[in-house]
Image (cartoon, rainbow, N blue to C red; front, side):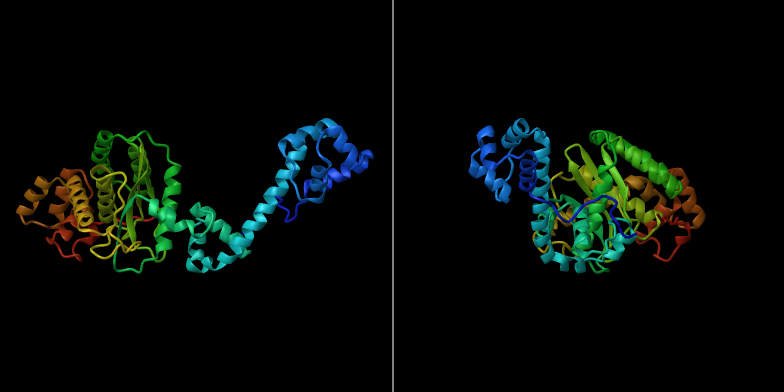
Length: 371
């Protein structure tokens, strides 16, 4: 929907000196007389009337005493003018960045209702900057350099730095809306055990419960649809020292992928530092940076998070005992899943990822997730 602006925001504003001059005319007072009555120099009064000087708070208080109209009236006029002037100067600077709109798939962001649509391109640019929470294009890489995030992505799809950042930003905005208790590692570990039973529930019901359980432990869980040029499955980061967030995209739209990604990100929260920034791209270069972020150490941490997820979903000993029987029939898998208290699709996903089943086998046991 195109934004039509219900608020009145005129594209003009007058210097308060014009109103001061009119007030003097109404009262039949000259600038010289005002200077005598107020103690303000004639030069200052003349500069205000000519528009070359602003009205200070001290001057506003004096004008209230001499002319009757409140100090807030005079300061309001001056403030309105200064804001209008500053906006005009800022618009002039932003007009040089209009081409930035062509670097993003705006239709996608508008369709997802992440931003509003404007017919005027300058206003559209401002809306985009409001979404990112920045004043101009040059602030975006500075914001990214401060993000402490680890996320899972597929190297099979073309990456766009800005689209990835847009996806992460949307998650951040949603996470800020979730009220969380201060982070408690023990509570979060207990929460992760409780979350296993949610795997058998429908996505719409499970999603709310998952968010509530994790929020009590200090972790905001948000689901953000994937957008074009972004193949990200999940991300984990700290919003502050007391609040972490896990962001999931439903990439693959199957329960096994969703839950593995969730526990993988949970692993990053519990196992790794709060100030680290590292990105997993399945062995490929960091899609947001070509520097040292993509290191052997980071690959090790990704493996750690993978093992954490696998073990939380199905305890290592239980999984080893199950595969030792070499019975991977549908009935056997369903029975094992029942004893574990998890969805059969998760068992299938683990068997496939570890080579016990082909990726084409028993996918009928996986549940489809969608927004």
